[in-house]
Amino acid sequence: MTSSRPHGIGPSLPALPARHTGRRRDRHGRGPRGPILPWQLPGWRTRADRFDDLLLDAVERLEERWERELAGVQVAVEDVPPSDPAPWEHRAIALGRYYPGDRAAGLRPRIIVYRRPVESRAIDHEDLGDLVLVALVEQVAAMLGRSPEEIDPDAR
Image 1 (cartoon, helix red, strand yellow):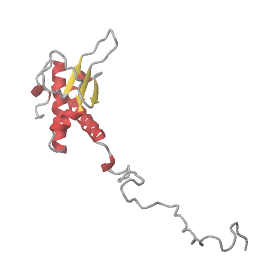
Image 2 (cartoon, one colour):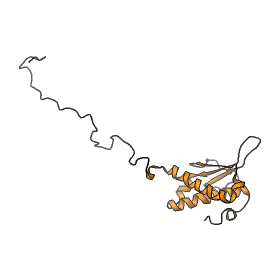
Image 3 (cartoon, one colour):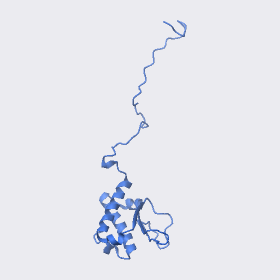
Image 4 (cartoon, helix red, strand yellow):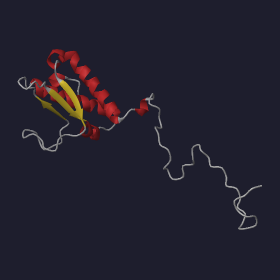
């Protein structure tokens, strides 16, 4: 037996246990993180994704009746309205905004629905769908110069 240390000098040390190379115990919640749900399950989708789906459903609903008038109109989602409201807007937080198009500048008309203000007013998922529709109907009514009841009588 060959050793680098002379025999009998210093205490003999026990052999160190082999380190595990697999997953280690997560003692304080700082371990490897990953999705709890796989991406294939519906719970994996973010709130923004679900909001986008609700807005698309509302647009499709309005296009059934107003397809010609809505042709060429961009509908978009932003998280929050800008901090500087337009002079004609009330002081209340806007749920949506209509920007008229400018043919000379090549800008199409645009309707924007603000996700966070709409979500904060919703009680549940069904109510959120109704509020998305109401916000969209109000902006389409402003664009067409009609009342919201005329655009969609069933929107509450």
